[in-house]
Image (cartoon, rainbow, N blue to C red; front, side, top):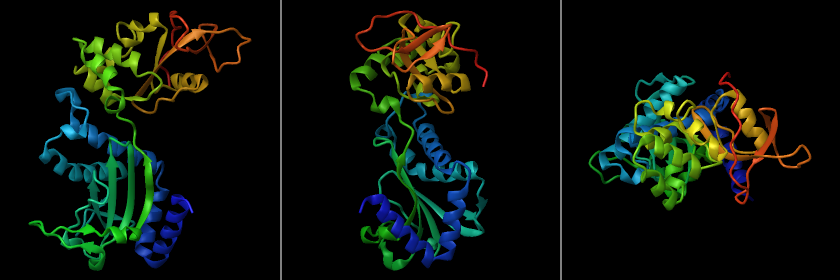
Length: 316
């Protein structure tokens, strides 16, 4: 039996046994685009902690211990703002009228549960930027399912043998990629070796093609308040790299259509995707898109450089 099937069986049993857990689980699952919004909230929280625009940081390991400790509170706040959960009386939230605490850990299984959460529901959240994965589930806090705490505030953790008491909302889901963290070290070094923010961005879009590049990555590389201007045409990377055949598509509907037709990752909200293109004939069987009245496809490494076409206007 695969993991997904096993978790479905586990969830069904837990939902049948605990009506309150089932109500909260259903409420969260039924919220519009919940998985994508949850992932984005986690991405934004990590990016906010890294504060790349001011610090140039892109790696969770570079955070101070106090910053990592603060991550749980920031996740709690981000999720409440995103989903507009009501304030709880004893716990963090009220979801479907039920008290729910929120606990985040960057280490799977590392959720620190306070004694006052006993018998309440906890929303357990895990995200690991190095793996680009995250999970979230609901857990009914019972003393016999917890490891005894020996820290000063007596916080407890879920026993490994009792993680099967977690009703998973989303398991091992995709966290929007931190491109700077995951790109080859030589490419990353080449990006940061450039002296100006504009030159660093140009190098980023040259070297991180066919990958969704989030706004925070752009902010971290540019380290300038007008970082978005550095991407666009009229002197930004979009115009600077056009002579090299590189298109930089944003989250505009027209750009998303072009990315889809070319077969490259489609930029989501606040994202960019760069790719090098070459002109092809109508007889070509390659995935292609019509721009400037001509047909274009993604270039292979051996194909020579030629100027890219212009992108359509930025209308949605």
